[in-house]
Image (tube, rainbow, N blue to C red; front, side):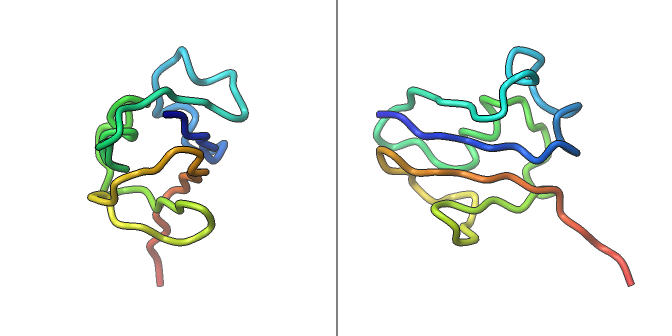
Length: 80
């Protein structure tokens, strides 16, 4: 099954070099793959530092993905 992933430009330096030049990454994943496993495939070492949306909704790292899901990854913003 396939998912499409868009990584915010500010995170491009933190992903695997083979994905850096792509605006939209298409991954062929297994049927029980989670958001966290996709982040690992991309080379994101600390998934707690990003916010992940699946089909436009914030999802936990343990969420199991489905065929055709669209994933967006943004940096976690902290401040005051």
